[in-house]
Image (cartoon, rainbow, N blue to C red; front, side):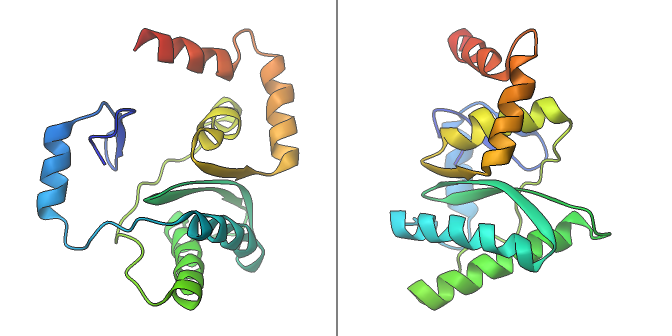
Length: 168
């Protein structure tokens, strides 16, 4: 939500600073209650995301969860649009939640989609962003490759993150 002290992601404008007024606006106009996933649900979401990759011919590089949402870092070579990949993963997650925790309205209709720009962005996601969530998983080979690339940079993605946090 926009009142998160760390800020929030706006679907069209990316990362935004914390905004209590926008949070009230969101709460006023939402049409369903916010889902608050339990720790067991979060573990199951990560497991189901990892499994889904094999069924849709995609590689799930990592997942991260908070009590209200999940991030899945995925790549694929097939000629499929990102909406199709997202829909397949969302369907797999919804099906699992319905089977294990009862039928529910688990996810919003839309979601943010941010394309990974380059290796540096990927490495930031693998080394900093995903592990910064309450629960996360990253493929070991991706973590090792990201650490190797990052060690060769003039300023590592981890150091940049530390500098940004100090500036705030």
